Image 1 (cartoon, rainbow, N blue to C red):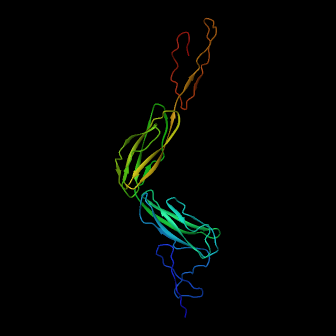
Image 2: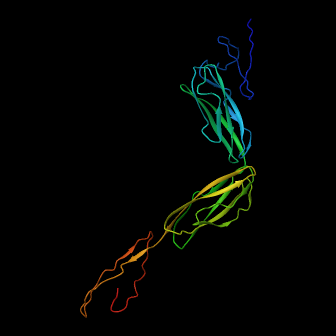
Image 3: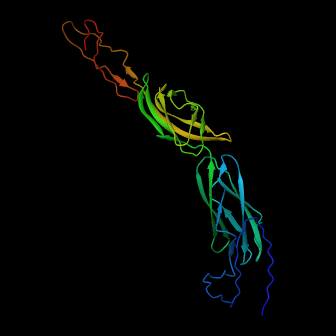
Length: 289
């Protein structure tokens, strides 16, 4: 008969169930493969965060155990929404454990997923899935970007876009923020609030003040009481100008009475749009075109 005394010294607060495997001992009906005596082991393969208000933070921990040779670890999450800190040091010794603390800070009222990756210097990385949901508003603009096309100077074009609250909380809306005065809000039926799943529309006007490409970024800000979420909408347009340059003098020199002398008149379009010439007039005798 053999007696075992097991002592638990957990490094994290998560409740977990573990199995003990003894080489050469087979338990009838247990088909779970034993843990190998090398490499890294994570205390769980997933972390699920509770629903969290936008802008606030919750944390969960995961334990890393090294059953192989001492090795430095590269610990990443692949996204700023989930941030990892740890006490693993520059190298994790054989049979040593350390704790990784993962923070979840949502910036919109949507569901998030990520992957915690713990990679040794050599060997296979161990991963744990990360999931959580933010509680707040999330604004979606359609279309995005908004392209007004090419507009002649002195004229304007309008585009209407839709704002939808795709989050899970009511949004308190601010006025769309635009820096470039070539773009402006012509009409807005959104009101002060936008409930979950509701949409509204805004009409913008583009009035180019100069020729060439014009661009700006419109900011749509929603507040749910705990923080702001910002949606950026790209605005684009092009100003067209017609700049006609006409040769300012023609010298016919001396011409005999009763004969005709001709000279070419050069007209140049230095703008970036087509110019239609309907007629050339204003000449008095004896000149004609």
